[in-house]
Every structure is written in C-alpha cells, then in structure tokens.
Length: 147
Image: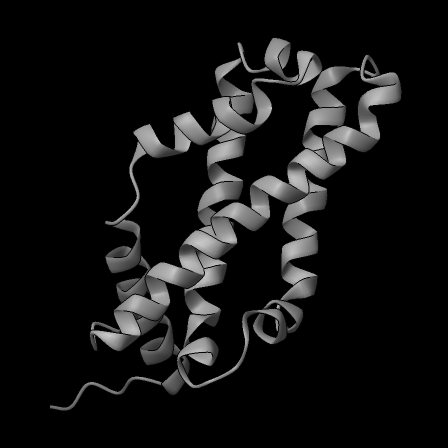
C-alpha cells in the first residue's frame, strides 16, 4: 500500500525540520541577555520585565524574527542584498515590531507616556537584531549546504 501525501503536507514537514535545525543554534541564555541589554536601559520596560510573561513574549518575538531571517536567507545566498531581502519581508517584520510594541503598551497600562516613541524604536531594534542573526545563520547554513 502506498501512503498518499499532499504537496502542502510535505512542504510543512520540510519547513518544521528546517526550523528545528536552525533553532538549535540559539540559546535561552542568549535570548535573556539580549532582552536585558536592549530593554534593560528603559525604565518603563525594566519595571515590566519583572513579569515572566512579558519576558517570554520577548523570547517569542525574537524566535519568530530569527526564523523569519533564516527563512529569507536563501535570497541572500543567491545574490540579493540584505536591504532587498529585508524589503521582501517588511510586512512580516513590521507585524512582529507592532506585536511587541502593543504588548508592552497593554501591560504598561498607559504608564509609558512620552516614552512610547522610544519604546517603538527599541522594539524595532530588537526585531531587526534577531532578524539579522537568523539571516546570517541561515546564509551560513546554505553555504555549508545544511538546509
């Protein structure tokens, strides 16, 4: 008997396998250090980071940005510039930035006041950092033929 699988199932299995292999290169310690490094300087966010749920949300966004960069790294491997590749996934990246920013606003209960613009830029820097990390690791994996 033959097992019938569809193209979408096979594609999804391959994507999950790739994501698992890419995620082996990132550690919780690194995630935690980067959250403290970027958001620890902001008084508003530093107070919120005492809540484990907020820190875990930062980890989730970092992992999503990392996977997004790794996924789009194949375009860089085939010769596109980083700016062009980043422009390709601008909507997804913007969604991650907005998600993190609105999460902070929700849990901050309106206490951020004047700091909301700087908080938005911090969120953008955070997502960009993890996108670039994923992009570089993914590009390296393509060069080593580990994809």
